[in-house]
Length: 393
Image (cartoon, rainbow, N blue to C red; front, side, top):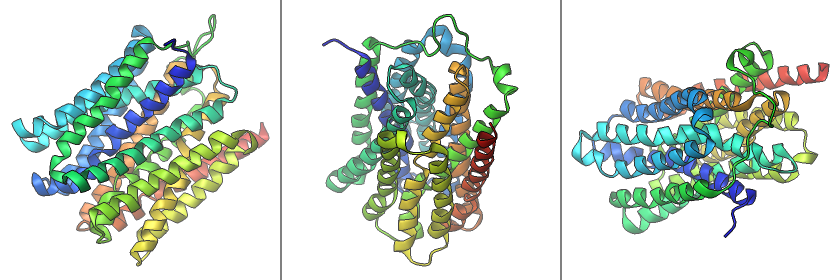
């Protein structure tokens, strides 16, 4: 079979599914780890922090090694690390102190996740497509469909085979990055910067005011998304007193479905929608959904707030990428790596703030989520300032 840029696009879609697996499989096991291994909530919180902390570090280091060893080698290594981490998750907790074993596995697959975060968007951006913003939004929707698949299939597996067999499922999920590694070995990958042109250096980016605005937006986008999605299962199960199966379906899965829907809508109709207005409206809706989730005395309404939050955050990450790519067309690998770093900093900060505030208030996840409303509020301010700048321009 001849591999074309259509194959490359499909491999990018699968790449974000891999990213969804490494980010969202373990949160479904938080309560299981807490009960089986007697790991306290504060340490479980650190699993999220370390995951995105490692991805953040890889994002930063990627500016040093990606252009040297090439996109192909880097993206194949990303799939290998992701698969290895998932497999180690089934082995290390049994031969090492449980938390140490889980932590090492998280670090290994987080390396893969970090490289994926840096490279998938520029690889997609380099593919010949009619509308880059639409293509980018559609690409990021596959993270959501991957998230849905992880929650739905994992929940079905746990219901049929029992939660105690989660190690088998971890090995099954590892097959996805292994298969994608073989695709990336052969499929064509185009250069991001046209021949004869030079990408912006890190010092050039640091001197650009638009770049820093986009960095703040990326941080808040990642934090707004993950603060709810990473804790949705635990919030539904412990905070609202709902069973694990119902909580997983009503919490993280519905969140992911609506997030993917928002991205797919823009992916299809993006040429007819003003991106900045769409992002402003979505961010305002996000603030409202956080308040409903955290403050509603009715569990069903809190779950609705959680689900609506999924739709609200959908456009934030790909929308910021698209605005940055349009405003800084010579950004190159350095720009995408630094934006991935900023986004992962947000992905770490959001869930960590929720966890620490909740732990300080005797496990009150509602108050933790309420504290995290800070992130979409800051993003809304940035979008309004950016809109004013665009009008002036």
